[in-house]
Image (cartoon, rainbow, N blue to C red; front, top):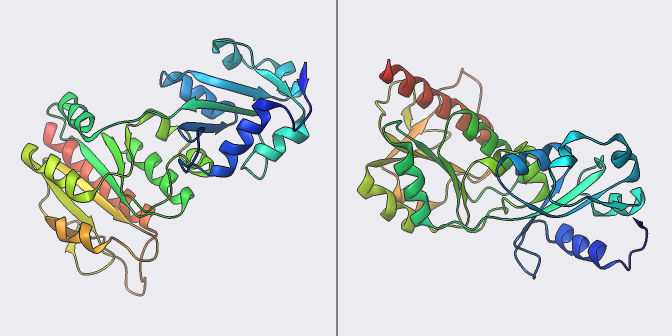
Length: 272
């Protein structure tokens, strides 16, 4: 049987989720909408169990191996109806929903404790509004060995389908703590020895001259406005990536990547 009508209840539930863009404003808001086989596989690898999987007959006929890992067979859907649900410009033949993990600040302390003496880094995304930038930041954070990503209220939801795609699975593997008040976060991390670094385009300490070690939180602000005033006030230090003459600034995600990999280089060097 192939879903071929917009009156189908599963299709309508998927449409509500797709239209929410990750915002938690209705009963389906605690679900993630995953597009394509790659994100489905990443979810399974992370131990997440898909609730609903819709796939076009063409994709089902190709019998990709990842489908054999599902707890139940996918539902076939007409390609045109799947296209209406997809956020991507080029739909990938499959949509799946999984429950979005809910995590507390107390669990973040557990993540840090499990990291032991590896000097974990936490990335704070403060008011980032572009889902592609937030997804890319999470991908970079995972690649640089960060322990977790935290978001503050007011930015784009990490559940946004475009954000999930841009992360290429990192947001499914890396612990994400959503909409955490910056002051609450600071209060939880300070007693366990975290240094709070605010990443600024200009005026901060030169990244390559600043002495930074131990447990670090790197706060990254929005693309245009940068970090919020409250987050800046909570910072222990402000750092800036030095640029060649004539260059005004870097994309926030790119600047964060430079900082995160510099911290990783130092941490790895300290262990040798």
